Image (cartoon, rainbow, N blue to C red; front, side, top):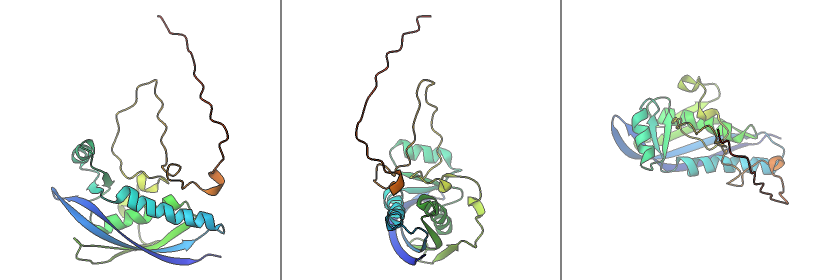
Length: 199
C-alpha cells in the first residue's frame, strides 16, 4: 500500500550571487509517497534523502555552473561547492532538490511536492511538484544521478594507466538497497607482476 508522508528539514548553506557570498538558512517541506512494500527500502530511501541534504548540501556554496572559474577556485581552496544551471535563487535550489532527491531514492519513494523557503528569501515559500515544467533542469545533469554527486566541475583526466572507479557514496554510508548488500566472507588481494617493457 502506498503511504503519503510529509517530512520537514532545514540546512545552512552559502549562496554565491552577484559576486557576493552570503550564508542562508533553508527550510524544506517534502510531500512523499512510498512505492515499496519493503519497509527497509522505504527507510533507506528517506535516509538517503537526509544524507544528501545534511551530508552534501550542509555548508555547501550554491553557485551558477556558468561561473566555472569561481567554482573551481572555491573547490581548490577546500570549499564544498554545489553547481546549479542558473543563479542560486530559492526556486532553483528547490527544483534541484526535487529532482535530486527523487533520483537518490530510486523510485522506492518519490517526492510528489516540495516547498522551500529561506532567510535571505524573506521566508517566501516556493513550491514545485510533478506537474511543473522542469525548465533549466530539463538538460541531463548531476541532479539525475542516484549518487551523492552535487557539482559538475570538470576534473583533469587521469593518466592512461589509471582507472578511476566512481562511488555513488551509498555503500560508505551503509545505505545500499537490501538486495545489493552482499556478505563478504573473504577478501583477497592479488598482486600482478607484469614484465617491464624495455623498448
